[in-house]
Amino acid sequence: MRVIYHLNSRDVRAVPSEAAWAESMGYDGVSANETAHDPFLALTLAATATSRVTLETHVAIAFPRSPMVVAYTSRDLQDLSGGRFRLGLGTQVKGHIERRFSTEWKSPGPRLREYIQSLRKIWNSWDSGDRLSFSGDHYNFSLMTPFFSPGPGSNPHPPIFNAAVNAYNCRVAGEVSDGLVLHTFTSAEYVRQIVRPNIVAGARKAGRSPDDVTINGGGFIVTGPDRQAIEAAKLDARQRIAFYASTRTYLPVLECHGFQEICPRLHQMSLEGKWDEMGDLITDEILDAFAVVGEYDEIAPRILERYGGLVDEVSFTIATKDDSEQRQVRRIIRDLQDGS
Image 1: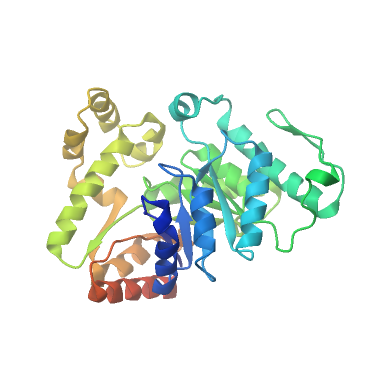
Image 2 (image 1 turned 180 degrees about the vertical axis):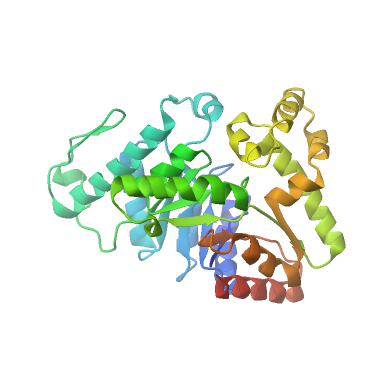
């Protein structure tokens, strides 16, 4: 099982040292998402400070950017990193696309499929010199002169992963992507019942093997050196689970466990601004469904027990206070890598 570290630096100037630290800890990859910073810029900085780890957007929001813009950026990052870049794309939800990015929200699943297909057409055009021709319902590309083409790449095309919660986008991953990035708000049961069967369906539609699709996931991981640290981490996990469970987009995940009645209650609390109180609705049963909990010497076997055979990679990021904790986290990373 590959183990991925998520960059947490609030100050972009700290990204190179953080990425170098993650590589020294033994992580297989370093990821950046699109929350308060641009993920491509963070990974550009990480590329200059590392030599081994993959550099992954987990995820970049697709629709505010033209596929052509992402094609150029991805190509440059692939060259800069010596072929270590992986492009993870997500659709986001309607409210963010329309109100945060001021971008059109339309048929997100089919649009994402075309987005990925058009990226590959653009890269192939640069490599071959053939005329660029892609015509779809959402994207059309027909102009690429030599002046605007970077020409053949010195590395393979970056693998493309797409994020998914709903069944449709899991099928998109099976059909056209190299991998699937699962949302943190997921569970082993949801992967078993919804994610993997739909990857298989998408792969069969495209005439490819489901084994060609790498699954990155693992849900919430609650760990620490002792029970006191665990209890503090549980409080944070309850708040984060409550936040996601208040969003109706994630209702299918709750329905998988019979927890759907909590969604409208949490949604109403979010409208009333009762963010600090929402975590109180997350019972131990709900926490256990969405989080793997255990001290440092327990957590790797518990992750492997729950997700072994279901996912190929796990996102595992934890802050350490001293050298002793760093040694324990290094051991956890090795145990996960050695597991299946």
